[in-house]
Length: 491
Image 1: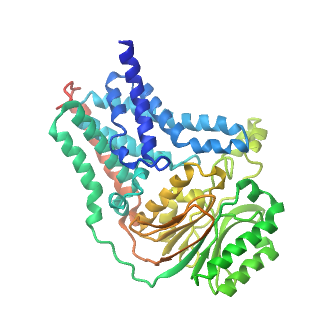
Image 2 (image 1 turned 90 degrees about the horizontal axis):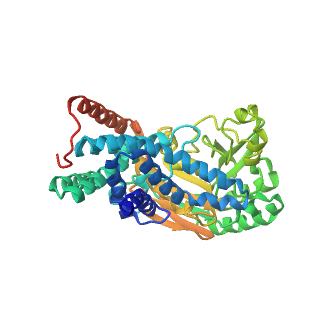
Image 3 (image 1 turned 120 degrees about the vertical axis):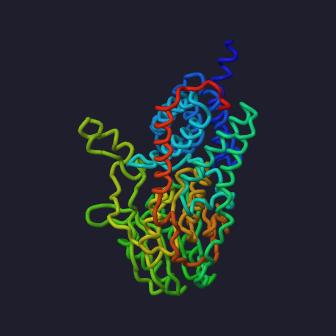
């Protein structure tokens, strides 16, 4: 009996491991179709909260292991990591309670409740100042373009909903051996696959050549202003290689030099001259000091070396680029602790600025659908992310971050370019195909196209999925009032 209890307690842990393995950090994507099954098996015993927390803590502890690479900067990151895992795992425990109750009402109630609860939790997890997009189920499919086209119509949440439904179908198929549940799993897979049969509007514009500057400068070196001269020469050499490919656009990574380039004439003039000699536009990331604040910005130079426009990051990284509610910390006498995380906050951008048709979600912003959608609605015909992933030294964060590029491309049917320092640089087509990638230092060259068509998801966002979830939740409430709990899992 004791052995059986221990075995049952290990099932949610097993689900957490399987789900983490399916996500980009490990890359065993197909496991996502069965990863939740062991956890579902435990929800009949009435210990939904415990089993939910065990599952969530295992998943998030594994999937966010890259956070611990920041230990080299401060040991406090261990405390932050533990709090992050707890912050994410407790809501999964609450979901476990709800699903445990739904389980007692039969398989169809459990199917509806699982899809609604999981998808809604994934949506809510991305909201607010502590919002985060990592660990989403749909990310497991980023290397399978034929199964992510649904994102262009209903967004990534719809993909997650289908994956949860498939897991429920597999769970009941194994548990009851009834064919109807194989049909549920097959139907979920069919909904995922069907959009791939719909033709995509072909690229109508002429090809534009993009040269992406990828670098491997360590974060420690990039933070040291004494390295400015050496790093400037290093990047200018890469820039020379880039313009030799006769590109229409050269893209450098986020804040790639330890300087405010727009306020450093000697540095700025070197890159402006590079644009003139290459007769090309140049896009780069830099910190920008103005109006008494520091902004994380993307800057576009035209072929004459003049600044066309500047985009300021609208959603900085909490505890990485600003401390949420810093004034509250100070009022509680914890100002010094907040300062140990970050002595000064970055300022938030004020407008959704498109740079001559280029939308530039910076780094962390590319992990959310909303930022790219807003840029496309404002006229972006090409999406380009500049990022600095050197903080995480070749960890699992790198493929996870790049995975988001696939979904931003499909959601909006835009070519997507990522230029990274210490991360993965690449080009993704509007259908989610990864055209080119590199994690080495050098120049990656490829052709892209400008597109003006708007997808259903670009137009309405998550509203369609949320409406369907609301209808399903209402149906569950009606079912609860009309039907007593059932014991037969095959009903």
